[in-house]
Length: 197
Image 1: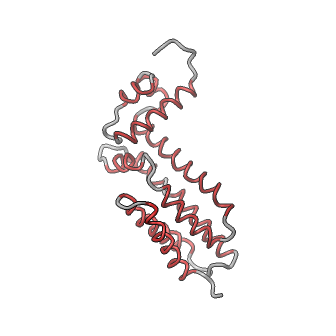
Image 2: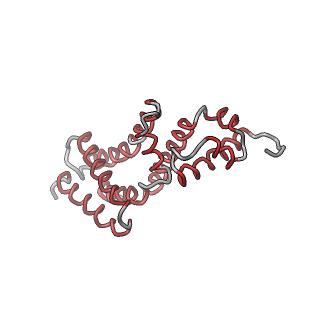
Image 3: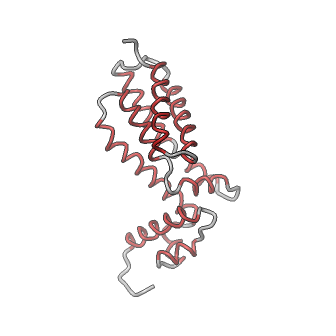
C-alpha cells in the first residue's frame, strides 16, 4: 500500500465498494478476504479491523442494499395519489429492483451450513423492510376507505408472498415482459380488498 494519510471512513468505503463488486461478480463463496484486500489496496488486517470477518462485511453490504431499495421507494411514493396507485407502483418497483447484485451471494451465504446463525437471521430480517412498505400502503388504503377493513397482517403476508413468488420469473424472462403480470397480480389482489363503489 502506498504511503498516504490514513482516512478510516474512506478506507471502509473503498473496502465496501470493492467487496460489493467482487461478491456480485464471483459470488460469496468464491470471494476471499484476500481478494477484497487485493482489490481495495488495503491489508487483510485493515479489513478485519473494520468488519471482523467476511460474513459480517457481507451482511452490512446487504443491509445497505436494502436501505437503498427502501430509499428509492420513498422517493417514488409521493408521486402516487392513492393507495391503489401505490400498490401498482410498488409492484413495478419490486419487479425492477428485485435482482440486486448481491442477491445470489446472499442466497449462497444463507444456504451455507458453515454460516453463522446470526448472519443468516440478519439476512432473513431484511425481508421486514419491503413487508413494512406493503403494510404501510395497505394500512393507508384501509384508513382512506379505499380498502375494506380487513386483516392487515394476512394481506401483507399474502401480497409479499405473491410478489416474491413472481420475482422468481425475473431469472428467466425479460423484466419488461413481466410488467403486465405484476400489474395483473395487483389487480386480482385489489378485487378482494377494495371497498364497493
